[in-house]
Length: 184
Image (cartoon, rainbow, N blue to C red; front, side):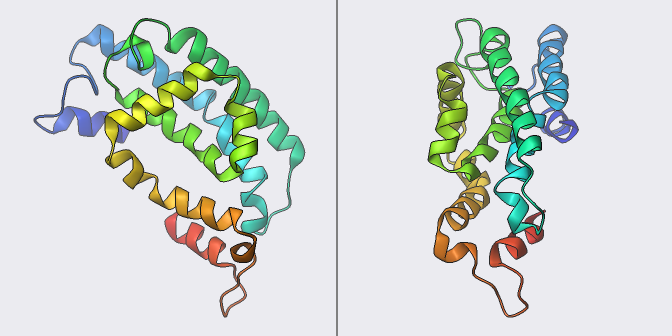
């Protein structure tokens, strides 16, 4: 969040909607960003790390931790719909254009792409407003949105392709594990 705030504040020509000059509007964005770290972030990260990424990283699956992550995710998505997406706008806090808060929260939810379509739909299906907001954010920021998530989509493709899942390089390390480690 600090990097997003710095970039939005330091470079001339950055549109005001990303991080408004108005202190009241900024405080609203900060409330979302602060909430994000203790709430939403714990959901997708915990689920993905303890399911699809665990075997790739040489760790055991942890269904209990994944279930705990699902609780955080569900509570967070409910809060996003009932609080942050209220209003007439298409973005958080009722905005008509995205802010750095939209970028930050959507990127965490995008991790769920690694789970596969069925599981992702199970988790996000009840949250139609969240799904529309993700699409609004994608549309408002493309082609950059797709560019930023290109690595995620490549990882998704490898995780969902059984032939590639177990493909090892000469050192015995999976290609996926090597790719993830090189990106982290």
